[in-house]
Length: 78
Image (cartoon, rainbow, N blue to C red; front, top):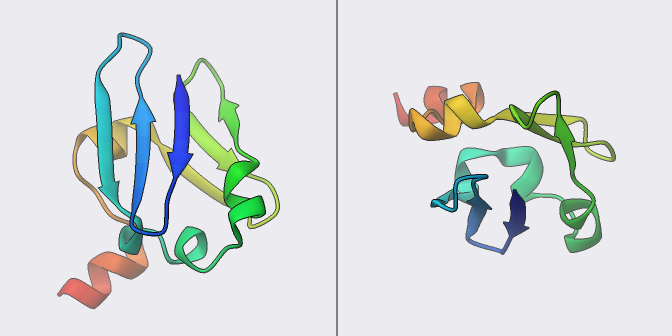
């Protein structure tokens, strides 16, 4: 699984080859992080999530597949 963060989106290449992208605005900590902080990600468990240690952000793959933004983004959209 590969993870790429641009200014506008979080892109994940899943283990089965499917690409997935979501707006960076869904995850405020990632959106406000430096490119170096975004580039330092770690896989959680059996590839069930992604962790960024410098900014203490965890995102589940299941949540991405379900189209769930962060709690803060959901509040802003409500």
